[in-house]
Image (cartoon, rainbow over all chains, first blue to last red; front, side):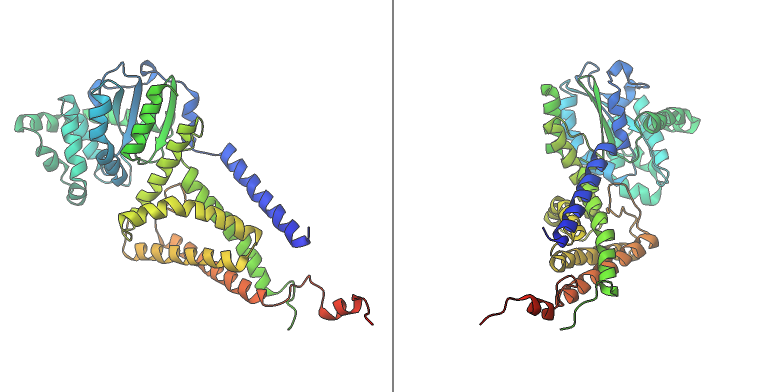
Length: 223
Length: 182
């Protein structure tokens, strides 16, 4: 083997070694959560009004989301309807919404407060839907109140406004953020935490419905 | 033909390019395909991790508003692995004229796209690595610098390839050792 080939081979080995070390030693900080097996009972601060489906479902999904985040909107639009129809409403998945407003989004905290207040009166789905569908509009105008008012009656809106104004929603949003930061080390939205078969698997970012469906089916199959 | 010096400026730039761009490209491709979601066992976890990472990258590519949907999917599914392979080949210096040129072309493309996004005040993620990175002047200059290095590396590789390798014996030495013929 001539000198050039030797040098090239050594270089290739170094690259392979570095990649191996990266794949073994690094990885997402999220993966630390996988060490702690979770059941619904051990998942902290579950507000049943922020959750959909049956508590006895074999899979629990916690979705850390920001209403002003385009990727969250993309995930919601791609998967929510099918997820609700095929897995949540059929008792296979218990879906927990977690608010994780990001500091760079100026209106996301307000949107989270409105959605949480709406959840108290059983209108989480409708408000989440209208917020995501009209994200670009209220992001530009800042008119979260007007957006939410489109899907609530005047009486419901009065209750929601009172709850938002009282500041009662801030504590529960802060709890979700603390859970995301401290337990799951959420670094971006959306982040979906899957709990199944006694284990926890965090996944950051968007996913297509087809891929999510396959994954859920595999989890349900216990493989 | 004048023999190339082993320690000239061109070769120094080529080495610099290989040592900087090779690992950067390899890591960029690796992080796009295998991070941040990296549950790789059992097999369906690997498929799901890879699929979500690719989907995330596709979302970032789409944010640049340059390509049609099929183009976005094509780039998302091919670019990470192309980067890994090209980065490795450039690092080891095999066929540097060819693969260095390909890498330079991709790097120039990145620089142009990022600069365009910056000038259009697009508040999006660079999509360069798995971790979110905003597009700011620092990123524009960083990409421009790497594109310049890549172009120089490729150009010098082409120039140097036309000269005899400095480690090969000069023609007169080869002639002197050849057996005498009657």
